[in-house]
Image (cartoon, rainbow, N blue to C red):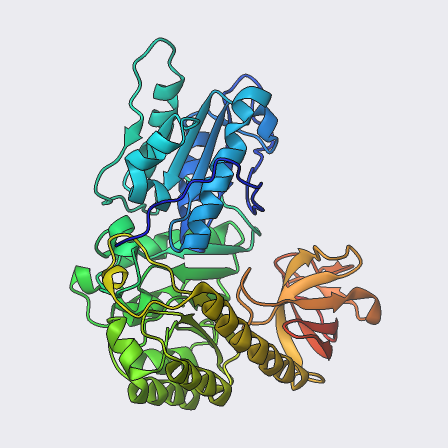
Length: 493
């Protein structure tokens, strides 16, 4: 039996990021929108597209939830923890109908697509539920719900064919010099644990020309790094009849002037060709960074998960990647507690992580997800056992990461400056190409340790490195996931 959606009526306030973004200079007469973005970078792009549509249609964004007349929560429904965070956030903002200016509360995104009527039934605070196929209509939906004395639709749902293009208006979240570009939507895989195809539909790839046009526009806006995202990036273009579609796309993107880093995410460990790896190794703009969730290495677990390949194939691929891409940073993810994961199967996973010495490792707990085939599997694993297994791997990985960080002391790295540190105003934060935004560590830059005159690309002297500039940093110290360094050469903006 699948697990029902549990909605606690006394939810604790959830910790959010990217919750309410302000639009400077908007007219105070316009209807105010408060926006909460939850979940992954793919959700972030959806939020940016919805925000762009709302601003274009005359709505005003506010960073003060008390002043928002419409509050939209873009939910995540990937795993149990994400679902509960989404529900908590809806409940938290439902209080604004009494304590704030809120007239309309909307749940959008993955959780909305999965549970639709259940959310409306269990959460009377909600005025509407908007699925993943309706993002392009968000301004129309808000306007409809704000119309007085009108019988309003509460459920805006369709099969998810929506796929934005380069012409879609967009209000980007995060740093101005780094952007996410969604190259496809949906997934054709049949992983036993994953509900993404139920929420996002079959894979639909954007044309190469559309993605390149978006990248060119972002570069004109000052973006230096684009992060290519989708549910199954290695499979990009298959639905368009492209052969090695990701290779074709990357070959066009490296031609875009102004871009300096191109970082693909979510490579499935199949269909990884030598042409792709050679492109990574040979093209300066493509970061030497592989993001590839392996999920497990035990053959029985992989088969039960409906993952292609076996341990031998995984080991061979990982070795091949390291051989063909010198100094590559390898990030992966595993699931612990999948039904049937015995102590011996987990032990095999643990030993492999220790042996492989990955640079970054994420560990997720298995959870029963409605509509997936894993729900009906036997040999369920207790939550306490799952927690212990995750902690054991993460503890080991901390030691691995710390040791890898120490090997970088004394080296000089090209670093993209992101801005002032969130930890302390006295230092800057940046990233080398082996550090992806938001999910990896940072390089702390000690400005006071250099007297070198710095120049911009135009030749003008500038007093300090600024967000979006590149500089060479000599690493002087290392923490578990972060590095510390000083500037040793001029800055190029």
